Image 1 (cartoon, rainbow, N blue to C red):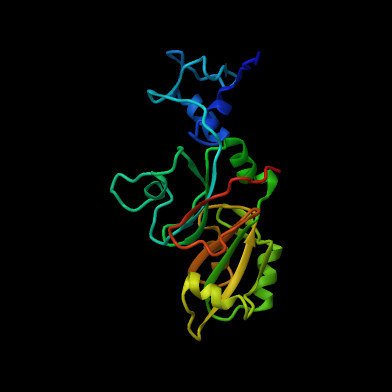
Image 2: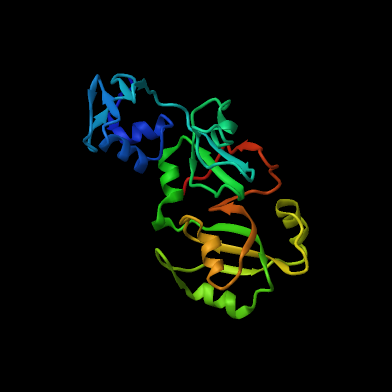
Length: 248
C-alpha cells in the first residue's frame, strides 16, 4: 500500500505550475492561497496532494507532471503571461501547451532569444537563485569598435546604479560565428561590431547598462544561452520541450 505524505504548500504550488517556490511563498504570504476553504499565510503549512483542496485566487489546483521547454522569444514581445492592453506577450505562445507553465526570468521587449518555461518550481529555483550563478550568454551588435581595455574594465567590475557589476567573459565574435549572429541579429554596418557577453546575473537591462558604462551602445541583443541550455537553431517564436532535462 502506498503512503501519501504531506508536502510543503509552496512545493505543491510549484508542482501545480503556479510559480517557482520563492514566488509561491509570496502568494502564500499575500493571502492568495486557500487550503480546505481557509486562507493560509503560514509558509510552514503542509498539504496532502489528492486529499487537501488547495485554491489559488479561487481556482482549485492539482499537481501535474513536470515539463520543461525552450522558447525563442521574438523581439517586440512582452515577457509577461498576459497584458491588459492586448500587446504580444509570452502567454500567447504557451496557451496551447498541455500544462500551465511559467517563464524563468525575462528579456526586454526589444530583445529576442532564449526563454525557459517550466512547471517545475524546484528546478526553476535552482536556475534562478544567485547562489548557483547560472551563466547567461548574449550576442550583441554594438556601436563602435571595442578595445581590450574596455573589455577588461567590464571583467574587473564597474559600478551601476544598483551596485557593483561585472561580466564573466566578453569578446568580439569570431568570423565563423558572425554568419549565425547575422541570422539572429541582422547585419552590422561598418561602424558596428558583434560581441559575445557572458554574465552570471539577470538584473533589469543588465547587459545594456553595463556596456553603456564603457560607451558601447547596444543596437540589437539576443540571448543565446541560459545555464546549460542553448538557443541553437530554434526558430523565432518556436518552442521545444526538453523531455529529460538535467537537475543538478
